[in-house]
Length: 95
Image (cartoon, rainbow, N blue to C red; front, side):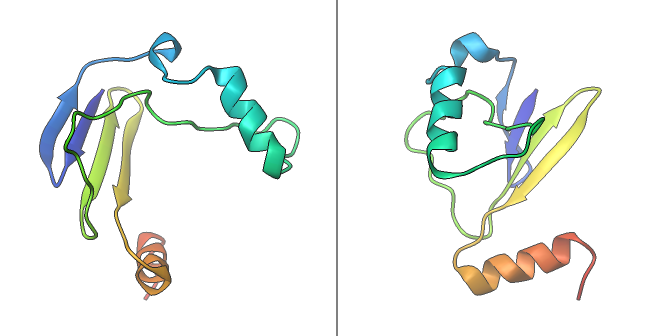
């Protein structure tokens, strides 16, 4: 797995559930306190990695998580509702 910020490699290696800061059961309990999910839902919790300080994302940054044999998840960092809406429209091939 590789994590890139603005195309520059930030982290490379592997992780597993034993390295998460919180137990899986605690995450699920927290999420179900405020929301209902349909049976069979898959909850994605992240990578289990905590970046070294200081690590602050800024509007306009792009973070890519690459997993060999699986693909790449690319997340633009946006600030505010209008910018978030523009990013969502652009990500699905809209105007």
